[in-house]
Length: 346
Picture 1: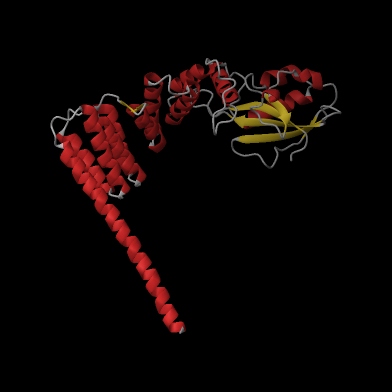
Picture 2: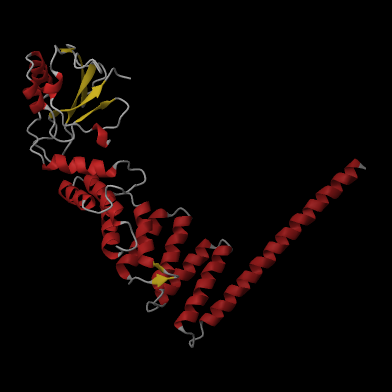
């Protein structure tokens, strides 16, 4: 009896599977019949442009439902090739590009997105600009800053009302920076800073965009005459000024742009960390310093532990850094006293 029950159960699932497959076959056959009927209608010369658009669109969508990616692409590209005067060709190629993108063929998708922009006038379909959609996709899949620079500039110039210009200026400046085009980077950061919403904008993945851009442009515009050729020269000068209670020299050695004084928990880009006080306010007692730099120092960053500044916060770590600013090769690679960390290291 148990064996007979198992056979009956297997038979039940087999019939169920057969029924499901039969249903799918019937559905596929029905959709194929629909496609053939639509293609027959498409050969009618008396069709209006709008009717022809609706038929082609339905054929493409029906082929996609069946998972006929290759057939859909072949149908659309063949139509564009045979009907170069179709005003909706940009849209058919957009569908082609999206199909390749969804199937992981990114380089081919990029080819079609770029082909649309280069060779076809813009077209608004279902309330959306084809060129705008192409540019958005190209920015996402592009692998080079040079290409993204082109696409960002096209978005800004052609679709100023469709994008956040302030955010795009910042992202464009970053791409110029990656390319080493500092002249354009600084110009674009300046355009960003001049926007009314620059101080309040929140850019995903980029905290403190306004402060960062301002610090960069301010440094570019400064004399940078407080920098030293080597770290050893800078540290020796600072130590000598401390020993001689020469607070005026210390004020000269400090960076005149973006100098910070903050606790270890703070961020150097926080507005509250920016400081313009004079060292003379704190040199009323003997200041001590370690002979050697802190062991956490690196080839680009260095810390000198000092103490005796204040009964409130006695220990200060003077922070020195190597200037990383290829926009000015005279300053690039030199050293500056960039800030102060209050308290013992965490």
